[in-house]
Amino acid sequence: MKAAPFRYHAPSTVAEAVDLLTEHGDEAKVLAGGQSLVPIMALRLGRYGHLVDLNRVDGLRGVEAANGHVRVGAMTTQSAVEHDPMIADRVPLVAAAAPHIGHFQIRNRGTVGGSIAHADPAAELPAVAMALDAVMEVGGPEGAREVRAADFFTSMWTTSLADNEILTAVRFPVRSELQGFAVSEVARRHGDFALVGTACAVSVDGGGVVTDAAIALFGVGPTPVRAASAEEALVGTGPDADLGEIGRLALSGVDPNDDVHASGDYRRRAGAAIVARALGTARDEARGGRS
Image 1 (cartoon, rainbow, N blue to C red):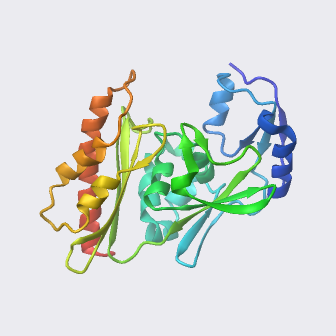
Image 2 (cartoon, rainbow, N blue to C red):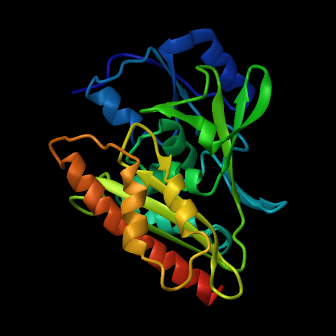
């Protein structure tokens, strides 16, 4: 099928793009990499009278470090962050998640901001943003504002962005010396959306005792979620911690749906196993320090 007719706009500034969104309201849709939007429109699951293409907007691409954060422009491709040495060194959870996103052809066009703003509950980058307490930079008619990841994802494919606002960048905190990270997921085939997945971060002290933990789950509900009770249970533990029990605790607070791909019970059981696995990897990395 082909998309329903629409008018194409190619603004060159954030202000111009915001003006177009304000003018056309819910008839307008932002186009970033198009890896989700274009198939939706081609299948006529969504129809928009106006597409506002951000690919020519200045200043929305690139990676830079400042003040304890790495700032990733929203139009930076997933492939770019996958291979960026600064990302690998300072925000390794993003680098670990990127290879799980679709296939390399998708990552060459798909953008960091597009994935996060699309807010697919089975996507990796929204969960990474949740695990790292990332900060979203937003441009709108009232100027710029910032939104914490915990307040950004509101429901399935829905964020706190207003119809005339644009996600312009995401700020991720830089890793510390005694932190480790891991992403693990279960999918029918590599490149498919995850049936269930997790993005984990673990901090330890000099003796190897866990001082902080973040466990973000995806594919288990309408938004990515933090497993707060499991995080609390992990803090203060040493090498003998029962990570299997932590994994089961992490999934005990969610109620994933049954669908044609997997039952909710399968997602809980598989999710518990991959959380345990990811925590083990992250904890070992944290204890080993930076390579």
